[in-house]
Length: 107
Image (cartoon, rainbow, N blue to C red; front, side, top):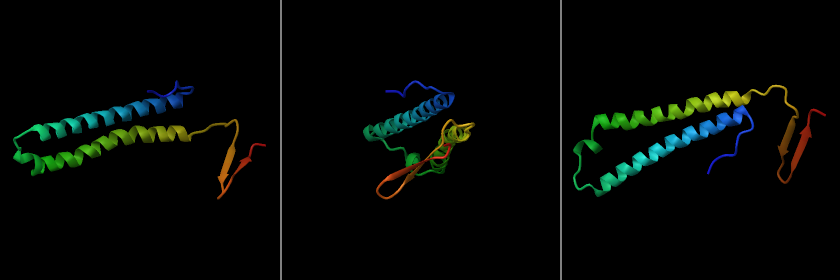
């Protein structure tokens, strides 16, 4: 399954960001699944795995680094999408309790 072919450079950037984020999530899922299965089927217990300052630092800093790798491309793309120059049509949609109303400010 994939997104449709992009018709603009911005949509191509969105597709790239989607693929980038999906790759990060896939790697996290594979790593967590491997760790869960290896701990489940392992008869030996590593005494430094559950109680240790090093592992505490690792599982605190690693998610922050992963979030930075997701947030930086996301913010870049957010500011790219915010720039609209010379729109062809401006449409304002207002949602009321039971109906929608529309305003065309260009006409």
